[in-house]
Amino acid sequence: MMMASIQQWTFKMAPEDKAFYTQLGKRIAQHRKAQGLTQVKLAEILGIAQQTMAHYEGGHLRIAVALLPLLANTLAVTVEDLINEAPATKKKRGPASILQRQIEQIGLMPRAKQKFITEMLEALIKQQQTA
Image 1 (cartoon, rainbow, N blue to C red):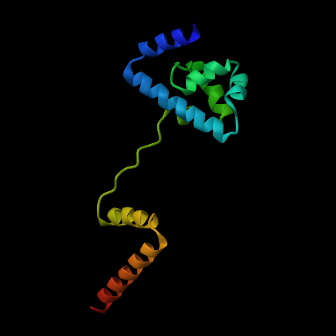
Image 2: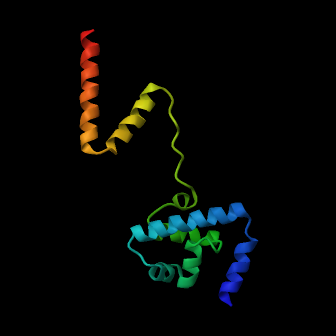
Image 3: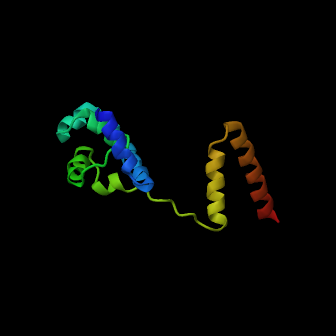
């Protein structure tokens, strides 16, 4: 019976609300795990059932605003950390940012390829300095 009422509640959420609560639930789960807490323990601290905690983390239930400060405090984060998505990284423009992205990509390559690229760059730089 509980699952049926949960499903009805979920279907009543607007798509953007569902997306928000799903992401919020993921952030809560991430912070909970980082603190070494189980759903059972966190639910106990918050004074709610473990099933309710599971539905919060799954984005199936709206979390009461009044619960957010205690939840954030328990997870050692701010309410803002819980409700806001990670800030979008600004795309920088220009040659320096392109080089930075390329350096990051090179860092992901196998050592042999990194060495080859480093040697090529050193040769080009040396050639430029003598020209």
